[in-house]
Structure formats: structure tokens, C-alpha cells
Length: 448
Ligand SMILES: *[C@@H]1O[C@H](CO)[C@@H](O)[C@H](O)[C@H]1NC(C)=O
Ligand SMILES: *[C@@H]1O[C@H](CO)[C@@H](O)[C@H](O)[C@H]1NC(C)=O
Ligand SMILES: *[C@@H]1O[C@H](CO)[C@@H](O)[C@H](O)[C@H]1NC(C)=O
Ligand SMILES: *[C@@H]1O[C@H](CO)[C@@H](O)[C@H](O)[C@H]1NC(C)=O
Ligand SMILES: *[C@@H]1O[C@H](CO)[C@@H](O)[C@H](O)[C@H]1NC(C)=O
Ligand SMILES: [Fe+2]
View (cartoon, rainbow, N blue to C red):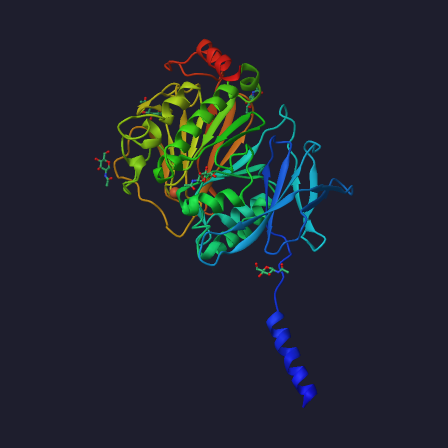
């Protein structure tokens, strides 16, 4: 009788104590560090491993880098908790295949690889660019996974709206999304900007899960990629004014400073193409009544009535070459445009020495909300449009030549649009009230 009781208690205690331990690294993804010569490896564990280590190397050598982890608690009722680990790999040998795994003495991930950045002079980066990819109906995912694994891309730009939504189901939709992109993002830097679907709990799922450079919790930053200077901003500061006007002012000032710096002759010579990415477009011709269907788009002309902090003039003045947006679940390419006026380089070759920035909206990677519908009246500034699911590719050849193409997933990978942008020189546009002398004055004011 006595021994039965002991066995009974033993079983009860065992049952109470039964628990799963989650030390295994998951949701592994890469991003650039403070230079494109640095790679940050980010991953999650659900239990505390007390250490964050990446072992990596080229051809047999093993290097060890250590980082840190930070607890992230989703804002939902379950208070779903995870440890997000970050390790920076620096002083990488250019243009080499590194093999790595990450984890701790309690468990290691599988092995992955990445190619370190070539030197600026020789690099012709190839990018895949898209926005609005969900967990459900992620139409372009498989093709992107396959192409990334084949080594087609150097970098991914995901222009806002992830998972739909990362905070859903107490953050578990976010976890599954990060697992789902792992076969892309564990191999090439996965560079992001926030979209409206990240807004919940003050963008915390976005801020905590990604590790973009610049120390702004991934909200605004810039990085150089061969001949490209890429600037990522949050258009959402203009649309969620419940967080106040301060984020708009702060970002606007940061952005102008970054543009001035990018235009310093020694910088613009090295990275002549300035590309800005943000989630919501300034122009679109759709039936959904979104802000971009209005003439006075807030990001374009600034906050209502006062028209402060408008981005179109700022980007035009500093000679931004390309503006990439998403949010609308379509692909749309514009003729060079400023304030609703088309500035073709020439009628025959609109993108050869264009007179204004070129806007591209690429928000059709696939999500549960489906497509958007184009207005049947095609505005004169719209050069090409498609509602096919797909994504954009960009190959940056050199200081004068960029090549874009649009992949249709609906049409089995067919290229439905392609174009070259050719520029003999980069700088403020002809009709901007900015010139090199003014810019030099601003530079002195800003950096001294
Ligand atoms: C592991 O994580 C779970 C869930 O957060 C937690 O309940 C448990 O106490 C943790 N176990 C250890 C040993 O840290
Ligand atoms: C939202 O997050 C930003 C960035 O971390 C922070 O500066 C701001 O104070 C937060 N706002 C609110 C209302 O919590
Ligand atoms: C389509 O565009 C025309 C011309 O800009 C506009 O008048 C009309 O309201 C738009 N239709 C819809 C459904 O948005
Ligand atoms: C710009 O160039 C395209 C292509 O030649 C042409 O269709 C369009 O009408 C031009 N726009 C203007 C305003 O000249
Ligand atoms: C830049 O690349 C294009 C496309 O490959 C090529 O035609 C052009 O000659 C190159 N220009 C320079 C200066 O290397
Ligand atoms: Fe969106």
C-alpha cells in the first residue's frame, strides 16, 4: 500500500514537472551591420540559453563570434515570450562563401551559408524587392526561396507588411512567418521597412524581430550596396499620428541629414544611385480609395493643411533616383514624375537622364487580402501596371546603368516588365531649387 502511494506521488510530480524546453535556434535571419562588410545573425529561442554564439568560416576555418539576447514579450493576452539573439560578424573577407551555424552550448542550428559583400568597385548587386507578403497566400514565396538558394540574389528588400500580421495569435503568426522566410533570410540579408500591418503595440513585433543598422530599432536607416545608397524610411509615421508628430519631425530631419551626407561628392561618386524605400506610395491609380489615390497624399505634400514635412520635394531636391513603395497589392511603374508632372529624359528614352525620380510600387508578393483593382482610367504618369502576384528584380551594373524587371508568379516566373535606367550624372534635378552650392552650405551647417 505504502509503495503504491509513493509511485502515485512520483507519477503526479512527474506530470506536473513535464515541460518542453526550447533551446533550439529558429527563425534565423541575416541583415547588414553598420557597413555591408558586416553581417548580423538574428534568431529566436523560447527558453534562455544564456549565450548567443555564431560559429562561421571559409573552407574549414572556424571563427567564433558572440552576441547577446533580449527578451521579447508580444503585447497579446498570452504574453508570448522569446529570446531574440543577435551576433555581428565583422571584418569579413570580401566576396567569399561563409558557412555558419548559430546557437549555444544547449543547441546549434543547422548549417547555412552566405556570400560576403564584394568590394564596392567590383560589385554589381542583384536584389529581389517586394512588399506585402503574408503567412497565408504567400504566392511568391516558393519561387523566391528557390532562387535565393540557387544564389541569384545578394539582398532582399521587403518593403513593409509582413505575415498579416506578426502580432496575430499572440505573435505566433509572426514566428511562423519568420520560419517561413528562413530559407531566404538565413542566406542573404533581408532588409526591411515597417508597414501598416506592423502597427500593433507600437510596431513592437517589427522593432524587436528585425536587426537593421542605424540604431533606430529598424525604423529608419540607410546602407550602401556597391553603387547603391539605399534609404529605408517609415511612411507610417504620417498615418499613425496617434503616436504623435514627433516621429515625423525626427525622421524628416534624419532623412535630410542622410541625403546631405549621401550627396557629399566623395560619397555620391562611390554610391551614385540613391534609392528610397518606404511602405505607402505617393501615387497610385486604384479603386480602393487609399491615400495614394488622393491628389494630396500625406507623404507627398506633408501633413494636412499645414503641408509640413512633405517628402516629394525633399527627395526631388536631393536628387533621389528611384523611389520604391508597396502597400497596394499590385505592380505599377511611373514615368519620371514630380508634382504630378512627367519629366521624361526624352520622349523616346524617358529613363535616359530622367528629369525627376522614378517611382515603382511593388506590393504583390502575395497575402490573404488578395489583389487591388486598377482604375479603368489610366493616368498619363503611369507607364506599366499589373495585378499579377510577383516581385521586382534589380541589377545594379555600375554608376550609369540600372536594370529592373518584374517577375509574374501567376505566369510561372515570366518577366512581364523590364527597363533600364541610364544616368550620365547624379545630383539635384534641373528644376529643383537646390544646387551644389546650396548643398555645400547645408553640409557645413549640418556637419560642423
Ligand atoms: C522555458 O520557457 C517556458 C515558456 O516561457 C517557461 O514556462 C519555462 O519556465 C522555461 N523553462 C526554463 C527551465 O527556463
Ligand atoms: C513607440 O516606439 C517609439 C520607438 O521605440 C518610441 O520612441 C515611442 O515613445 C513609443 N510611443 C509610444 C506611445 O509608446
Ligand atoms: C478613376 O479615376 C478617375 C480620374 O482620375 C476618377 O475621377 C475616378 O473617381 C476614379 N474612380 C475610382 C473608382 O476610383
Ligand atoms: C513619356 O514617355 C513615354 C514613352 O515614350 C510616353 O508614352 C509618354 O507620353 C511621355 N510623357 C510625356 C508627358 O511626355
Ligand atoms: C555599365 O553597364 C552597362 C551594362 O552592362 C554597360 O553597357 C556600360 O558600358 C557600363 N558602363 C561603364 C562605365 O562601365
Ligand atoms: Fe500596407
